[in-house]
Image (cartoon, rainbow, N blue to C red; front, side, top):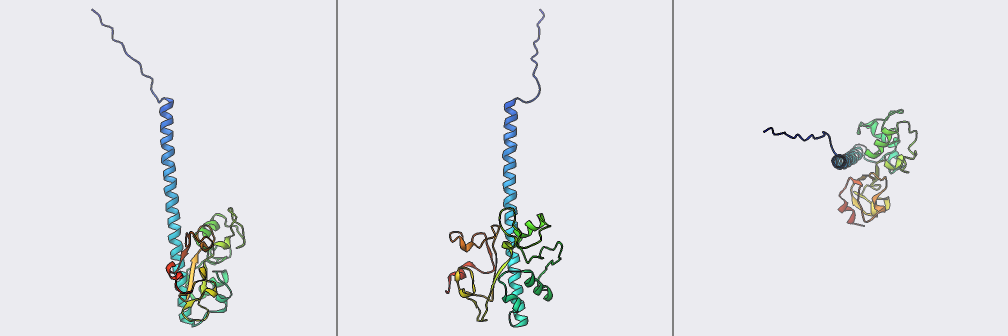
Length: 206
């Protein structure tokens, strides 16, 4: 007796549902990777800003030790303008790039967020240039306040953050990615700013 063998033919490939599941999984993985990358980039810039702030504070202190007083150019500003940077460059105290065409410090010392904007828009011709999010490039200059009377404190009357009196010859900080002093947002202070001093110090003497 002849037995007929039946063969079932299967069509190769994926069904629509399987394709949608695969696409969904790829989308989830991509979103996770992008979020991780953003976190790593943010952390890296915060670390760079903290290092930058510490180096500037150290350079101010070395300058004071060498000269015994603050030069006029330091007293005329409260942020790292191009003129302040040039004063440090003459002393070889900071690694600066003051090239007039593409130097990252040609408008003053910018924090990592400001430098990133300048790299993306190298044709920017002024520190007052408005960036895509409405901030000015100058909002990302490194900030500082000096001990003006050489008593070992930066006094609140000298414009230190939160009006505090802090034991230091100089306070230096980066305003962070938003380009604003976090003291204007008390619930977040010091928030995303990077400081050269321990924030707890600013709650001491008034």
